[in-house]
Length: 234
Image: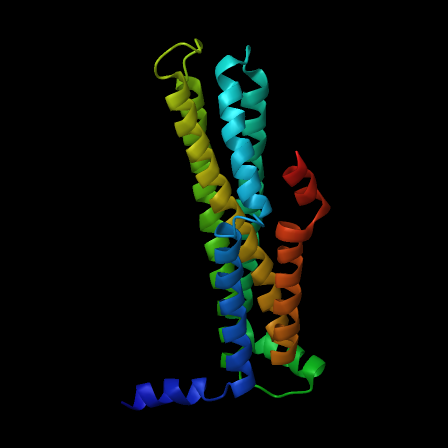
């Protein structure tokens, strides 16, 4: 019971503003992701528009000879997921190292914020950052594997358009490709919000501002960007 009370006492060190800011971060992270993947029919997101282009890509695959361009494109997609996965792993390692040296971080933060908080406060803030980075890493790794599945399915698409399984397998490859892209985009959003979570080290207000700014950037790119307009008009 004493140990339990100690834990409760530690969490009591966080102010209501900290709790509200963290809640806002999590709600915005989940909410914007859901809206991007489930937009209205009249105003689809860039991700939804790109899904249709991926289906069109796989239909063209059936009749394209040779398929070198398709292989190169998929290879570039896999390289992108590998790069971000490696980057998240490095960032996660650095964050865990900072958690192990929370006392030193507390001393530096005290000089910057002029606030004397115990090390447990900084450790918890870094744990939130680490969780978001870990989630991003797992999403990127899964996206990389799904793009690998897609490459196998693309290789299994018959060369003859009249083959009864040609367009069926091309459709399967398209859906796997879309699923991989969805996982990749989730990883990106998790990375964006991890950057926002880092602002919590400067206080609750900084976290709120960073969270709102992150949502604004993501929302603009998905629903109001010039590239989306081009995709929509095509």
